[in-house]
Image (tube, rainbow, N blue to C red; front, side, top):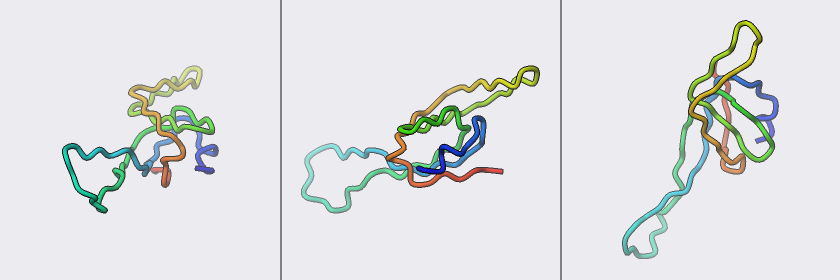
Length: 87
């Protein structure tokens, strides 16, 4: 997504993206197969060109302003449908 580069670290966002879906067992030619649509809420941890790093938890050090994050999910930018900044 083009706008992901403008997001500041630690910004709370909602990310709508699609993921791989698997259908096990023997099946016919079923046209209903589709990818999974996922909604992730979290804090921007990193924002390089190819992936979006979203953390479940975020802490800002009040003394030096550094940001620490926990439980990071890496989402390929090609899979992202939209990013919404939460207020």
